[in-house]
Length: 362
Image 1 (cartoon, one colour):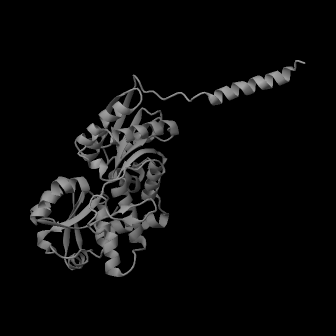
Image 2: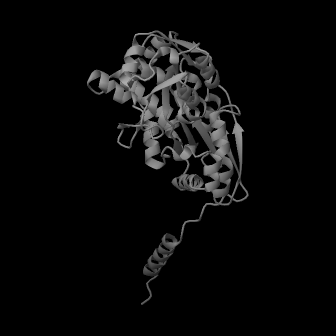
């Protein structure tokens, strides 16, 4: 016997089953224009990162969209990051971030109206940091611990872009090792710092791995500069391990343990950890806006993974991306949270430490 209610129920169930069985519509950016924002002027490291990825993302994103790089400089990346915070998560806008974007989010005050923990990371590209000094320091041939003990006894000059610049990671490392008599010299970019060290006007330095390999290593080989430690690298369990780029060089963590007979702890160590997450684990990164769907994030991340294995990209990037593991998904989100999450007490200590070491009020 025909039963209208049973028929309707079975019909609706059939439709629902059909919908469930139907494959999700594939994302396709064909005919679309995608913008990669860079919150810095043209020519810097973040700009180079974006422009190296640009043609390969166009190749590997579905539909081969046209991709442009748009520079939005200002305020140590604050202007661009504020704009990105208000961007729709439709997959048509991404942004490159650097260590400065992270530090500005903490120290930028009311001007920084963005929350990086709300963004969706496509990929984080870690890069190690190396500490070095001039030949005048007289530590050539010494053990890392012996070198640090000698550096503790001297006064130093260190170049830094601003009191809250990305170079703070090195200041925290020096202080953690007991190297505290440091006079900051403000307003110096990376190139100016290197030249000042070669001329002997500064005597402590820090460089990311790629710049160290190309622009500092020749001077360490000639004996004019001496590298003595890396900031290390964090594994998925928050353990410090050797820098993948310089696995034979000791880390600040190892030298501290050798000198003190115990692992570091306390507020300075917590500040150092966060600065290493900002300056090493998230050295350069690519984000999509808040509210972007997991499906769009996956399509972007898959395109980056295809890019990383593309022989032409490997050649164009000089192999730099293959030195360090690229971070995706939960590993990327965890690194962002480790960099930025802190209590009010920790934040207050952080600000106080910067004012003390940089000798300026914030």
